[in-house]
Image (cartoon, rainbow, N blue to C red; front, side, top):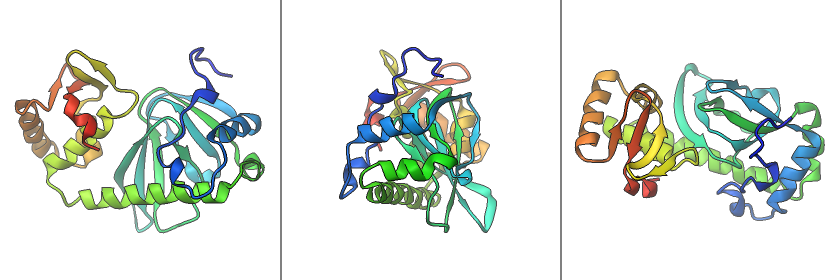
Length: 228
């Protein structure tokens, strides 16, 4: 049952990579059949999602963080992306990299259980090419995230800030783009040690890139909306 009266499954926008699929049916079909074979689930912040169980998810509202995990070093996670409305979480065919997911805000997902997954995929036109495009997009973002690990700490932090500023959860205000995130969360996503992160935050505030307000909120400058 949808507890949020302002949420409409069918108004969920198509993900940015959807047009890259060489063959595809209407995006609305994925939502209609998903609602037929599945249901809307509501999750609180900091809830992990196990993509390995075989369930299929569409992000409807809220924010989900994706991490890349190497089978050789399962305890080390690389921040890949903050999923937006319409993004998918599904069982991948490739096994070189595993992905972990966790909500970072109150989130609504359209969930098709594993028992209905095969029927759901069959009901969507050109589902194979659509999922290939989705997987290519995810693997490209993982490759970019792995490359960023060799960047300067301040650039890694700025990347995280820009991604949060450009997420639909962010809110435009007269002070800048408001994001609900603490310094600790930003530096953890960036994979930066606390001392180096403190220097980076100081520099970014002096440069007018961000302004922290209290413990869990910052305002990003509008030019960050073109940074990712």
